Structure formats: C-alpha cells, structure tokens
Amino acid sequence: MTDRHPMRPFGAEIDLGTGDMLEPERITVRKASDMRGYYADAGALERLIQEGSDPVHYQVFEKPVPETPGNLMYCISKLMPGVVGDEFFMTKGHYHAVRETAELYLCLRGEGFMLMKTESGECTAEPMKRGRMVYVPPGWAHRSVNTGDDPLISFCVYPAEAGHDYGDIEQEGLPKRVLRVNGRPELVAAAAE
Ligand code: S6P
Ligand code: ZN
Image 1 (tube, rainbow, N blue to C red):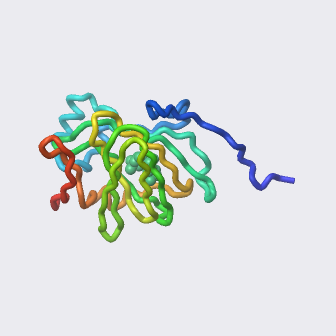
Image 2 (image 1 turned 45 degrees about the vertical axis):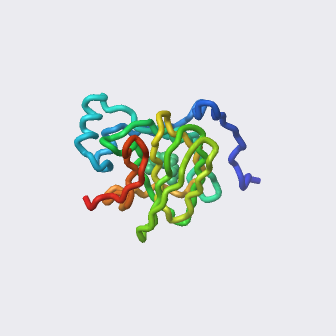
Image 3 (image 1 turned 135 degrees about the vertical axis):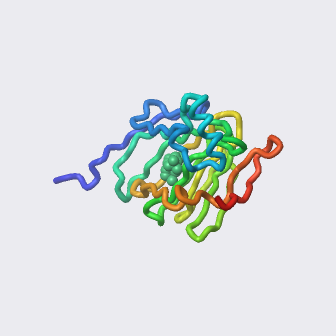
C-alpha cells in the first residue's frame, strides 16, 4: 500500500541570537542592482552600486518544501540596514500569486516596518522589532523596510503554494515610502513618479 503522506517529518535550526538559519538549502540573494526602479532616488542607488561594489541588499534562506497545498513554506528573510538617498533599505515587495494566502512574519532581530497594500490601494504599516509578529492577511502585498542599524531578520511562514507576484509594485511602487527625516523614520506619501 502506498503512503498517502510520503513526506517525512524534519527539523531545522535557527540561531535566535543572530537570526541565522543553520545549513539553509536555498539562498536567494538580492543585490543593490536588483533594486533598480524601486527607490525614489535612482541616482543614489546607482552611486551605491558603483561605490559600494553592488552590495548585498537582502537574502532569503530556505529549506524548501514542495509547493503544494497543505504544505507550509518557511524562511528567514534578512534585510541589510542602510539608506538610498533618504529612503530606508527595503525588499521589492509582492502579492502572493494565490491571493487567498496569508503570511506570518516573526521578527527576530532589528527594527523597521512591514508596509502593506491591497489592490484597491489601501496602504498600512505595522512596526517590526524583535519579538513582534506581523500577520499579513490574504490579498495584501507586503514589503519589509529596515529603519535600524542592524539587519532586519524575520522568520516567515506561508502556504507553500502561494507563489510571488511582483505585479503593480514593480510598476507603480507602494503608496507610501519610509524616509529618514531629521534622522527619524517617517511614512511619507509617495510622490507621483
Ligand atoms: C515570501 C516572503 C519572503 C519574501 C522576502 C523577499 O512570501 O514574503 O520570503 O520573499 O522577504 O521579499 P521579495 O518581495 O523580494 O520577495
Ligand atoms: Zn510573501
């Protein structure tokens, strides 16, 4: 008789001090040059790419599971600190391709915001800091923003079939940006670009 549930249980280790996943099987790396078109100050991004030798912007560490309904994908998302012009480092941001899938972020290190928007244009931000959980409901695009001096590291869990859709974020961005104003993070309406 074949087993209806052939997958074997397994464990993984995450260093709760540093936020690092031990022995990840897949690492996705986004460099500054992958972020062209995302920041308000395109010139400042080009200077970062040239002068900083195209530094790593963020990384996603995974031990992937099959992308099928019923499984839970999980990862460590690590976003470096810094600014592009006055804008804090951020991830690209995406909807889930399967819109009816949520995601849970547990922040392990650093501080910042989870910036979220719906397709009808509603936009909100939830603070992130060590020990804070942010729940991204179905249908909400989500982008992490690092406003601190350390890497912003979160443990993320979401339905494995969710997929990524960079959709209108890639074209239009989000309605709000997180800028450094007098040394402090401030949520500012994105200018018509
Ligand atoms: C996946 C989850 C994270 C992001 C990661 C990078 O659903 O939300 O693993 O993929 O933070 O962000 P992005 O927008 O470049 O995929
Ligand atoms: Zn996601």
